[in-house]
Image (cartoon, rainbow, N blue to C red; front, side, top):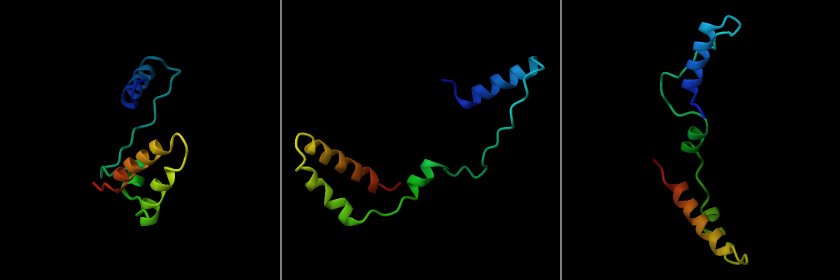
Length: 85
């Protein structure tokens, strides 16, 4: 899949060479370069209550067959969640 810059350049080239194709809208980028969207939401995520961090992994061990894997996955998620950059 082509990235947005390449698609924009292709669209510009087509608009220059074919009269029935309109020019694309100008690309606008924020000047402050702060993260937006999901990345901003992840950076500003709320603190997780301690009970939500400590209670589910042991309870997941009681789920037959996949409980151990769920517990390990939840612990990995906690390490990722509580890592602040």
